[in-house]
Length: 131
Image 1 (cartoon, rainbow, N blue to C red):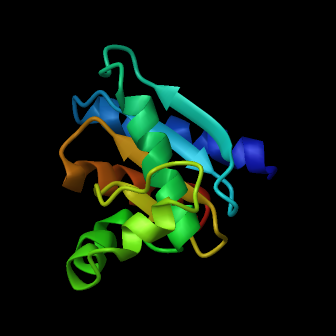
Image 2: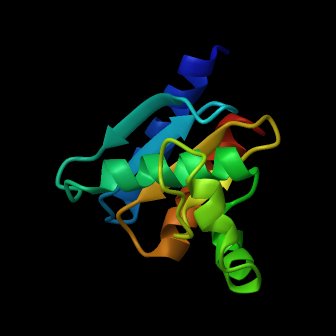
């Protein structure tokens, strides 16, 4: 499966799962270097969610960890994310919903409750990349 076909399968899994739960989200998939492969916004998802999903995925890829773990990192080392952010082409986020896979591919979901964003991203990764 090519990177593009995997990314398309991931966003489709997120879309289907979100629809089944009555959610409207956006999903972004980036490669191990944080370069965008595909971003999708569901009908009636809020206009700004694609950008947030993209930043969640890019942050997870750049820092090699899920964004949900970064809040504790910011608390322990308050200046670290600011210093890292100055070296990136985007501002990293601590918002939950950015999930990294062992392959380096990262998925960001935005538009639902943060726990739901994480669940949608992890479910798609498990189904497509680990399935």
